Amino acid sequence: MSGVRTRFAPSPTGRLHLGHAYAALQAHDHARAAGGGFLLRIEDIDGTRSREGFVAGIEEDLAWLGLRWDGPVLRQSTRLAVYEAALAGLRARDLLYPCFCTRADIAASASAPHHGPDGLIYPGTCRHLSAGDVAARIAAGTPHAWRLAMDRAVAQAGALDWTDGIAGPQRADPQAFGDVVLARKDAPASYHLAVTIDDAAQGITDVVRGRDLMRATDIHRLLQALLGLPTPRYRHHPLLLGPDGTRLAKRNGAPALADLRAAGRDGAALADDIRAGRLPIGFAVASAYL
Ligand code: GLU
Image (cartoon, rainbow, N blue to C red; front, side, top):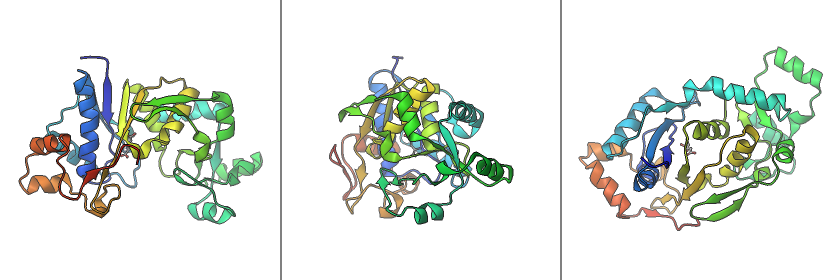
């Protein structure tokens, strides 16, 4: 096996659909074409949305498509202590602060709301709490998230670049996201923190994933710098579009792989059709820069 390693990292919050099949094939084929490894990671730290039944469904659907993964499946829910250790290190460097705001507080406090790639930018309300106030709220058990103090983080990390295999060289602009959440009120780590740590832990050399996560890579690059982790190569593939011209999702009629299977479709033949660009009528791959 060559040194190339990719992964497919779905969240078990529903059945896989045609868009997931496309993404999994992109990651799988990228590795196999180089004689490399393909890994499966289940991103199940969101206890409110993840369902055990969907984990089995993901494995069934991938196997039906004829995709085999190497080694054991990594479950993020088994790695909470690792994420907590990273958070403790960042806290000790004064790069995190607790945030007690609810969604409604954030919406109400943003008098001139600024939007970043992930929606509303946090207006920084909890940055200005006194140390005594913070200690009292934590002692009282008030639920809180932990946010990255973006200005201090960027000052420590300096200018950061990374390269996309399709779009070319990128200058990271994590500030565009504001003070991102690294540990949620209802989940011990955010997607950004867990994905960055696990890509390094699994020795992923090539992160092949959808174009929708292109800007998120700016944050992952920053976290790599702060945590001393290597930077993989990235390849953000175009997304599959539904008949309404928007990104494929269940709501715009993306067929679930389980339904196609139940209807008697052959999974390996479907995978080959997707590879050859023969998609069901109305579905299309977005142009590379959409
Ligand atoms: N778990 C993420 C999702 O299902 C994908 C993460 C990634 O590929 O970085 O959207």
